[in-house]
Length: 439
Image (cartoon, rainbow, N blue to C red; front, side):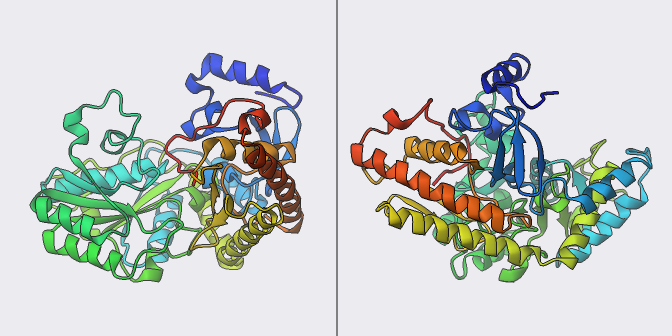
């Protein structure tokens, strides 16, 4: 285990010697961050993290949007530790497994059964397999503007990193454009009787256009396709009962994860009984192997989920996330305006809990180089902000530190714009995010 005081380059070299890419997630890799960003973390508490060199940062990454209450939250960790001390894994279903499933189906309207996995990809891919089995159809329609939906071939085959995936596999996945009703209607007009499912996030930083979700729901119902909502990021962040519940459109299947266990590894596929039961044994139809994992129901993560739900019920987490996000949006605008670069640096969103940072170069086009410069300058000032994920533990001290860093970072950004030579200001190569959109 790395300990504080290890030079960043030494830690990175050690990581690359034994881990392809130096990290177990692409979005954690060295190529995703400026040279002065933390090379690795040792521990975190609340909304702060400590890196391998012993530096302390205000953390806006929060475990890739995974920790919405705070790092090492006592009530949640105590529940998880208490559970694992009673045994972490059993060969028959556990009481916690049933309690957690009951809690989740009660929490999300229209959902009647639950199946646990370890990440959002597990849930989304299980939904695809289940939909194909139920409908007997091969095609899957998906929102092509979504940054990420699964690690599996049906989705990765449609990305730039599709080596090793046969065209015969990814040709079964059909793209449409979010909020473009005509693009969805076109897919159904051309392939309607072969589409098994529509897989999409309900929303990201942009609100669904009036009638868009309703029309997608209608097209699925008319054709017999299943509607799958991916709320791996939005559940427990936009609304406790799922953001779909705020728009009045209920899916057939629902994927959740990330914030549901405040950083513990757990996801779930929820759905209507008539569909989910096909993966069970109480029916006389062909069974579907749609999700079966050894560690899906590990006790610590299930206990963490129950404790997380209880925390949400006793604290207004959703409102706090929105307030913290609003503060960041306003602070970015104020700093950018103060330095005359409001047209080049911004944080925007239809949902304050999920601000989207945007960085433009002198040509007013989205710029990876200027994004790298911004992240570099924030890191130099003790703020780790690869994106903005507010947590319940982002309080006044963290926000004040962020405001001060934003002002300095925008000052450097303005100088680089004025000189038109951003490379001179960078201490390393340009960071180029994989999958995650940085605008």
